[in-house]
Image (cartoon, rainbow, N blue to C red; front, side):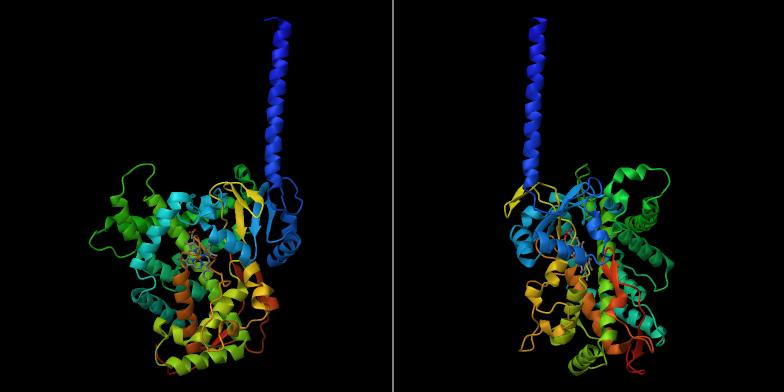
Length: 505
Ligand code: HEM
């Protein structure tokens, strides 16, 4: 081959490669053209500024929905993210085509710190299916939806009421006592024990999860660009969060070791025992998902997902009780006339306390504790409404867009439990009521949460009159405003006046 031929060969090979490269670029960008519309973005920073201008996350979300429609995209750092709003689009994607959208996107840095990308909340595919089935079956075995669990919740309700009694009518913040109450319900299920209301270990656990949730929603640069965690020192605060999570993990590991040491196949008493029993049945190997590591991650997930959400809902409920005395009186009258004040309300009473249940539903609707559901991802490349979404892309269902949709609720801005009561006095359950989300990957703890909300809130109103601090008024404008892992009220104080000094409990 002459030098000229060799040169021509190199030239044609290079040209060929260039054409292929341009074709790939064109193909990729064509695919990108098929993503839903969205605002212009700045490389690396993405659309952060869209969300910086207003502390209420719902405002930019509504603005973007209005401008770009029910399915739009924005960039979190360099990553395109699809937002799905409104009940129709959510039903079409996450219910009708739920199987296609049941994965989670690539595990983020905070989730790696929380559960090592294992557990239940962050996993996808077969691992998710197997773990979810196991957790649901096991929680049912330990009483989910049955009376053995109700007895345990009632034990916590009584401790919660006596804790509130101790405030002796002086102003208090509802969050700490209810966090201990609902955290203890998870503790009963997971390790068969519970914490005292002043146990420092429980405070460390809750403070750790609180800090984690606030960190996740802080929009810290290191979450957008995980490589920054290698910067020496801790200017992003991520190492401090990792340290707090490690303390919780060490505590959970101790619990697991204790259970392993006293394990008795004939006496499986709680979730940890049940998991150990399953571990013994499984083959050891790298595909085994019944390991101590998975168990510890699932426990982290259950505490995180099950405590903050439920306690924030009860705290919002106490705000509406204190500010809407008319509604509180109606709930109390219903409880008094249906079951009296001699014994605590039980799950068997639930169908008769229609207005009380409607109040709880309205608290869940109005406060939209989870504004944006956990991120989903398509299990393979998919087309929806003419848009092409690649496998694994982050998709965020905007729950608040449904719970505050005027086309569904008429006057979503008003707190009105009656919207859930029919003319015949029965409870209405509209499809659009989705605070626990919907479809294949809906909240795994919904029935537990609804049981807890009913038992804690109805007992609270039966026993106490909830009031603002003496001489003060409470207003939604003063308390609304923490958009962390959950949409929580800013800390506020209420008083609990015992209705009958000589009453039961
Ligand atoms: C008022 C209380 C609660 C609310 C509003 C709530 C809401 C939610 C929402 C919106 C999701 C995301 C669903 C999705 O992936 O799109 C979720 C997931 C989850 N929740 Fe809850 N939740 C509550 C209480 C609980 C409780 C008490 C537990 C404890 C067992 C729990 C355990 C979970 C778990 C494990 C997941 C992940 C499910 C999965 O990835 O398959 N939740 N919850």
